[in-house]
Structure formats: structure tokens, C-alpha cells
Image (cartoon, rainbow, N blue to C red; front, side):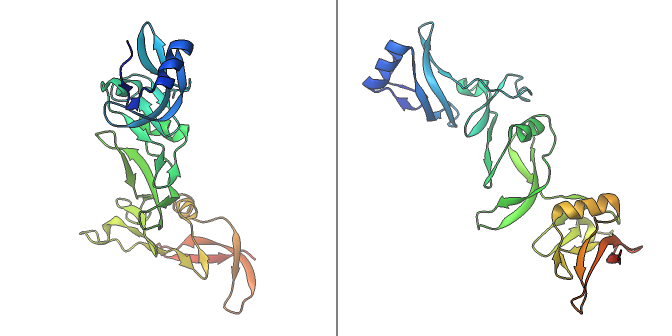
Length: 233
């Protein structure tokens, strides 16, 4: 017996014919789980039961909720238990216009944060930087922290459109650690800033003086954690 629809897909005479003759349909990108999540699969008949069949690609890490396998679909990473509403793990591959890799998903499933990146796109079409992590309800969330503050050692450094700053600037610690995103006409990327905090100095690069003369040097924090340029030539 074949029902009128499966996973939100209406069974037309053509699809019923595919199932009866070939025991499978073509792949669909618009099937719906019982939890109302979209996924991609073809429909097959197995032991008289119509069920979804996926491209045979799964993540190495199990579902952190139920321990079942996590499938890699075209638009999401989804626990196999989600199709029967036994589990609701569903990670959309597209997060703020960034497409997550299989490695990103593995990192999230293991309870870690992804690497900091600055190519996320807000609803206002503005680029922003963040890490991703799964919260206690296994929903993908943003973490805007780049790293720990190198000055007070207790605050976290985040970034806005103008500067990198410590989270302790308003509380009783009143940490004044600030680094402008553009200094002497050169922009400091989050990756460069993180390297600066970890290593105490940046890589050697080229600068131009106020007289438009070119020289090489690197950024470094002084004893008060103010950013200075040290000439190397």
C-alpha cells in the first residue's frame, strides 16, 4: 500500500510508477521531516515500506543527543533519528551566508567551537566575525569572542566595526585594552590580531611613513599593551 504523501511529498502517478517499477524515485531536495525540517533524499520501497534513502555520506561523529549516525545532506547535517521525530538534531549548512564544511560539523558535534572567521553576513548585509558553537539545546549560536584579553587576562576580546576591545571595560576591572582595526592606513584582520595576542608581535610587513616613505616592521604591544610599530629596516 502506498499512501498519498511521504515526508511532505505528494505521490503523483509518475512517482508511484517509479516506486512500483524501479523500487525507488529520483532525489528530492524538498522533503520534510516530522519536525518540519527540510532534507534531501530519494524514496525507496524496502520490505514493503516506503522510506527515505540518502547519499551514503555520514559524519564520523555520532549525534550528541541520541548517539545515532549523522547524515550529510545537501542543505544540512541531520541525525537519522530526526526523520521519525526520535531526535531533533538538525544543523543547517548555510549559517549567515557561510556554508559549513563537514569538518565544521564534526567540531560542533564534539562540543567545540569552530575557528573564528570574519565573512558572516548579517541580515543588514554587513560582514561580521564570530565562532560557532552548539548551545545546550544543540542549536547553532555565534560566539563573538576572538580570544582572551592579553592585558587583564580575565576578559574576552571581541570586535566591532572600529576596534578590538576587552569585555571588562565596563565592570569593576575597567580594562582599557583597545586596538583600532585600522592603524597608519593598514587594516588589522581578526586572524592577524589573534596572532598578535598569542605571539606578542605580528609578522613583518610593509608600512609607509608620514612622508610616504616605505619601510618594513611589525606590530608589538608595549608594556602598557598599547600597539606600536617596531621598525626592522
